[in-house]
Image 1 (tube, rainbow, N blue to C red):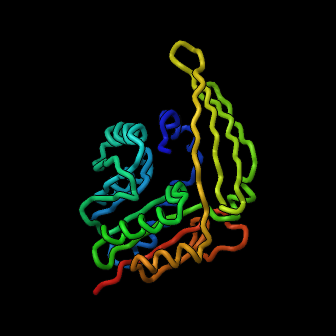
Image 2 (image 1 turned 30 degrees about the horizontal axis):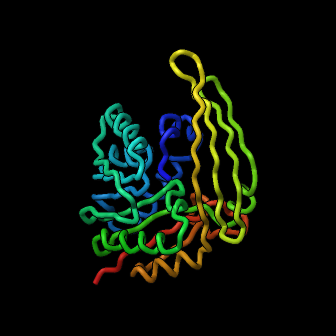
Amino acid sequence: MAYAHMAAVYDKLMADSPYDQWLDWVESNWEKGDKPKQVIDLGCGTGTIAIPLAKRGYRVTGVDLSAEMLAVAYDKMRQAQADVNWVEQDMRELELPVADAVISLCDSLSYLTEEEDVQETFRRVYAHLVEGGSFLFDVHSPYKMLHIFGDETFTYMDDEVSYIWQCFCDPLRLEVEHQLTFFIRQENGLYERMEEEHFQRAYQPIQLIRWLKDAGFEDIVLSADYSNQPPHEKSDRLFFAARKPKR
C-alpha cells in the first residue's frame, strides 16, 4: 500500500533518520567506478535523497507509487531550487529511459512482499541500466523483522502529530504488518484520527544475491548498516551494490 495520510507528516516522523549516511554510502560506491550522470531513485518518497543528489549535479528521476508523497517531494524541490523529474509508477512495472545508476533506499524494496515481485523489480532495474551501470539498495534484515519489529508497539507524541504503531510479525515469512493510527492536529486545533496499514518482508541475503545474479547482475557486494563492512547476526539493515556488466 502506498503512503496516503502519512505523507503529510512523513518528514517530521523521519527527521532523525540518517539520510546523510545513505547519501555518503551511495556516493562512496559511485566513486569506485564511473560516476553516473543520470540516476533513477526507486521508492523516492518525499525526495529526501533525490533532491540533495540533484543539488550535487546528478540528473535524477524520482519514482514512487504514492501521489501524495510525490506532491510533498515536488514542494520540497521548489523550496530547494532543485530540478528532479517525478514519476508516479510501480517499481514492478518500471518504464523509463535508461540511466547510469538506480538506487532504492530507506528499505523501499522491503515493501515487496512476494518473491516474484522482487525478481521482477530486479529484471526491470537491469533493463533500465546502461552497460556498467550500478544498482544500489538497502532492505530490512531478517533479524530486524524478528527481533526489532517483532510484535512490538511503538508510540510517538508531540503537539502536531502523535501515533500508535503496532507490529505483527509472521516469523515463517519474515513479514511484518504495520498498523498505524495517527492523530494529526488540524488548523482549528482539533486532532483528526487517520489509519494506515503497511506490510514489509525480509529475505535472506543469499536469496537476494541469487535473484540479482538471475537478473544478470555481477560484482555483487553485501554490506550492512551504512558501512562497507559485511553484516553480522544482529545487523538490522542490509546494503547491496551490484553492476550490469559491460559486454
